[in-house]
Image 1: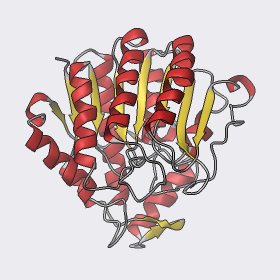
Image 2: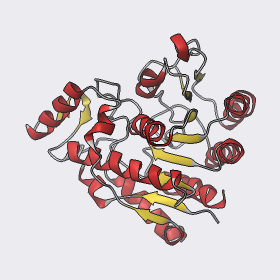
Image 3: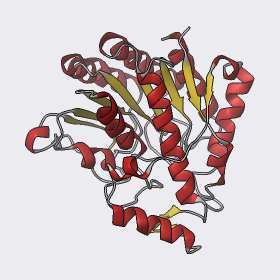
Length: 316
């Protein structure tokens, strides 16, 4: 059994998005309860949030943007830059606690204390761009983690796999000219196609050309389409790239029971994706996977989807 970390902190629940918002504290509560019921929680190495050093956040985001985000929270406003981005007084600090917890998780994996990890954090991050909040996201958690790992351990090739049903426009934007990070996204397009990016012809630019890969999936598709893409596109590309660390934007909103998409992926379909990610990590990255929660809004399905995901991390 692998030494699998589980990042969770009750303070992440303090990010208050108001009534009826899909990115609600209950998302983490049901994940935690599900792990308790399944008996998996006792097998995990527990990690808590910590306040990220500002230099790591500034490695991805403009300082003026960070200050604007902080001042908006302190002003008592209920949204930031658009109505989707609901927040409260504590949101800025909670976002820093999420980043800090992820960076501590990364440190332990890179130093060998942990083999892999799942980070149950909020707010999510993959829509956040260098100087813009979008889609419930304020700091780009996975991008900051990648920059931290590169800086502290000199890693030359980081792979990011984003299977959230929405395209991670922020992550793509941050790394699109950088060949040291291969960003791969499989997502729905069109229909429930927020944010409208992630078309197949978007392949990076300048030195990063060819190190961004988008695979849009039409609404109504499910397991067979996803399996085909993973086996015939993702696996060969990442086998060729050989990532030394694999980071996963783990969004579970492509499930058939999730109202945020028109994709019909089953629980077994998510399991298949994760099995193949573990295979890539074992082959090229010494098993080093850091999964970071993005979307997934079915409170009924989240506990089983995350539990299955973590069980595969434990098995390695």
